[in-house]
View (cartoon, rainbow, N blue to C red):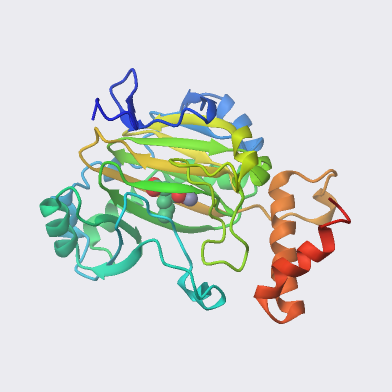
Length: 333
Ligand SMILES: CCC[C@@H](CC(=O)O)C(=O)C(=O)O
Ligand SMILES: [Zn+2]
């Protein structure tokens, strides 16, 4: 890997893709007992929380233990011809008939996933286990799940008036797997269990630099900018990207604020990467809470509502682009 100039090795020996064009500062790392943590969450800024032990009971979740205990219901595994696993909403393909899904979602048993994982050879399609933890898991897993530090999580939910926990995703990836830059409309405590992931995060205000796909596109919420081969002709503002960077390892918990752009890559030196995320609905905002000018998180919600409403008002999502161009070009530009 060392002689492949697409990759770099950091001072801790972590190996990940080199993105010289992207300016970043280190994500702040704080010990779990630091009072500063609440300040970051209140300001909705990313922070890596160390030694919290949030999901310590999942440390034993290696492939053997999961094979024994997770249950034989089929699990959700994404399969990609490349190392990238961009999420897409298959139900929106009708609006974009030329859209080619960048990967496939398969359902397979844990036995099948482990067989594929263990026999995988470079050049073969990559796999990425991404399964919501539901009550169908075996009793041992359920007990481990109950032993997560829910008191800490609930204290943050209450303190910051977050909505309900919507889901926990169990992620099991191969070294080198990449989740390209996107945003989610939920607060996220991202707990790293095994292996290392390099993360890049960007404030929602970089909306114009990351050129998200249209609302009605299958890749809604995903950026059109390919960090490995950025097209600065089509996306000139991508040159101005500036964000935060860090590597999360076993025991680290990354707070990914709602609507913050994030790119997450399993480092090449990892044997396997296992993560568990905690997605929370954002806090309910009342009109009296609104302060102007709006924050970009709020402008993002406004922009999504406009695109959604236009699709309905025009009766055809494919008219939204031409209509917005007619509205803006030569008038606001
Ligand atoms: C499908 C979710 C993938 C995850 C990133 C990663 O670990 O690859 C993420 O983007 C998130 O937790 O929000
Ligand atoms: Zn995400």
